Amino acid sequence: MGSYDLKQEVTDKYSLRGRVFNKIREDILSGKYKENDELKEIAIGEELGVSRTPVREAFRQLELEGLIQIVPNKGAYVTGITIEDVKDIYMIRSKLEGLCAAWACEHITDEQLEEMEENIYLAKFHAERGHFEQMAELDSRFHEILYESCNSKMLEHLLKDFHQYVQRVRKKTLSTTERGIASNHEHQMIMEAIKAKNPEDAERLATVHINNAYKNMVKNGLKEAYSNE
Amino acid sequence: MGSYDLKQEVTDKYSLRGRVFNKIREDILSGKYKENDELKEIAIGEELGVSRTPVREAFRQLELEGLIQIVPNKGAYVTGITIEDVKDIYMIRSKLEGLCAAWACEHITDEQLEEMEENIYLAKFHAERGHFEQMAELDSRFHEILYESCNSKMLEHLLKDFHQYVQRVRKKTLSTTERGIASNHEHQMIMEAIKAKNPEDAERLATVHINNAYKNMVKNGLKEAYSNE
DNA sequence: CTTTGTACGATTGTATACAATGATGCAATT
DNA sequence: AATTGCATCATTGTATACAATCGTACAAAG
Image (tube, rainbow over all chains, first blue to last red; front, side, top):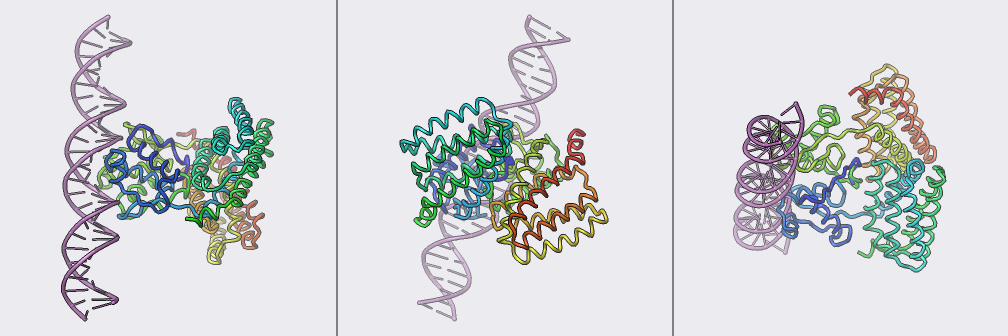
């Protein structure tokens, strides 16, 4: 994640490089390419029907995103995330997500608030029924709205990067119905604090929410997910 | 800033690409290339005696660093930082720097502590005499040590990126002897809190320190620095 | 005078050719 | 048997050639 918006718009969807970049990123985050897998320029180029040039450029970007590591004259390898990294990210996120929620109080639009409410309402439905797929989707979307509502491209991009970065790990850990319901309730409280334009509450609640998410993750087998591979 | 460590080691110093990357980055941060300047692949390549390929790869990385913006089929332009960006960065930094100081309490080494003390001692000398050049250097180094002492590659990289990112702006704003002395005193208090293994104090002090730095920057003509160009 | 169309040039996007580097296997030597 | 040296090959690093795109200048039409 490079540094941050410091990072820009970046991945134009229509250049070959952009397509290659998105494809590899997708494959890493989805688990198709695993930790320490070697990515070869030619192989990927042939797979996508392009030459090495756009592949190389995509590799350079992926390196800055932290998804791969390039060893000069040797190759590109999918980077792993250590348990410590995950912990760090969640600690950092909890601070920044709090800041984001506080800023949202000032800058959120009515449309965004409405989408949040709808999101929470719908999530309640799925959480109670244990529809994990939809819950994950709605959870991601909730945070995305929150990020967008803080009115800071910088912070928004940073948080989106982190959020995406830990998707890899989240998929390895189990969700539970209880956590789903609790999480959604936390979303609601955050939303209400923002709606009431109470930045202190919003910040505190968002911070706690991320901390809870992390605790839950640890409880439900973060370590096991790692030791099993 | 790509997301971080999400970003990696990155810029190997010995490949052409690495050299190009560092050179352009340096030139942007030092002000040689100014906002909205167009960077042409061939021109830069000739200047550095390399072909377009490594230049292009460096461009892709610089884009993710947020230093330039690439418009497809058009060109690469040096990105500006808005006043809002600077404000955002300082707010974010104040949170993260607090976190960093708190973590440092647990992980700082004796060598790092010693270098901090020496840094503060020397900075006192220069601050009292208005040696701005040396003060800036020592200030940067103090923060670098702090970042390294938190024992989180992730956070360290993030903070270094931010720190470097705002160097561009810092150079436009004036330092004063008073602020220099006050800043150094804040450094000392942070250091002592870390030495005393008191994370709460360390966090609070570091947070306040960055906020103060920002306030000082605003007071001393951040806006003017911008409106003048 | 303004507008539109076109041709040209400059620049980036992509592909490919060549150079440099590092890994591997095998044979020769000890 | 272990080690060293070398040859080979796979892969990345760099340069260059060609294609696609965008901007501009200028001329023709209104």
